[in-house]
View 1: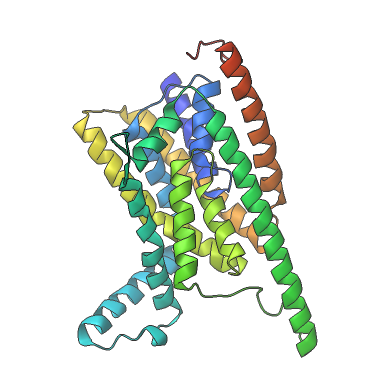
View 2 (view 1 turned 120 degrees about the horizontal axis):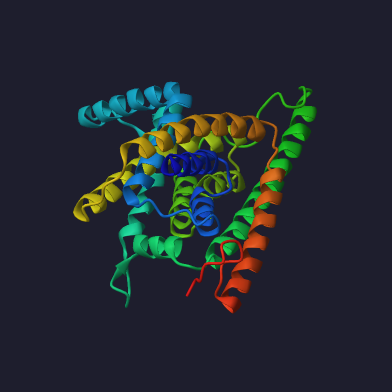
Length: 319
């Protein structure tokens, strides 16, 4: 029963923080650190991510079907010689920008000189070590990115209102910012996703959304791109992790796994709906404050732990 409760707790953390711009990896690491929750292993972590993947597919199923249809038509045009970059419609443009945005993820498999490890191995090392200093600093960086994005979005809205007033239109008649990504936008957001995957505490959704907004994309387009970009990224990470888990002969209890996956899916669905509403009304400030306060507290505790060698909540020795 305790294993099921732990799975539900981690499902709640994963579902809420995977999409809210507060970092799921950071919160899972902190949960395991402070509550002395045992790391359930790669396979369980993969299944939690699959639960959140179900949530985003349910919310965005119409857009996903449109993009799959657009991808099929693009392939057909390419093979018949009818494809023209300048003639892409909105969905075809989004498909192409998603493909470009995923390319930086291959950097995760780049070797780190002098270590014998790949970049993704460094990420795993930071997520499972006894120190939470990286998580704290990364949360503070997340807060800074969200603040910059919020200010940029506010500036774009003010400029849009001035343009609307000059044209004699009602304020808010047209969304502030660009509706289409260009290749530079896609690469920048893709790099943000790659960096966020390395540092536990640096929010993937927060980083990709913030970079999109700072590049001048309107709020809804930036958010939709961020979520859809996460689908193949989560799938790819899941396949790599399953391969590692099979090679290491890992197993997981069925009941806790099912409980965690269902919880992650339900909570993730609610988190997406909440974030879409908050982004539409430019309410990023609560996330800016939350990640800043939590990051500062975590950094302070991490420094105390380094000096004492003891977890202040559980009393467990860290070194």
